[in-house]
Length: 134
Image (cartoon, rainbow, N blue to C red; front, top):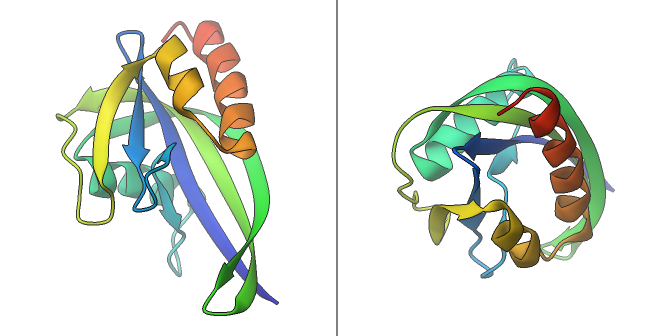
């Protein structure tokens, strides 16, 4: 069994949240693999920037999700740590890694998230968003 560790961000700006469209046409949060020597927080900020062209600043830790997937016939157990972020600068412009990147109104984003783990992280992020008045 292979293990992967990733980090990502749930970034808010003016009552909207930043989502990416994956190569498999699913809306999700920007995330990516933690590189050797990198802290999860650094990965989250870097991946949001690389995948969307938007810079964010971490406000708090949201939580982590775990899931299995298959890569080239091998089962992979993945852990993803998510961080609440506030907008700093930039306009969403998808990188070559994703099909699209854009801000969505909060309720619309809820309907777009297909993965259970994403929906759970989003609910936690919304509670933290209120706490930090983002």
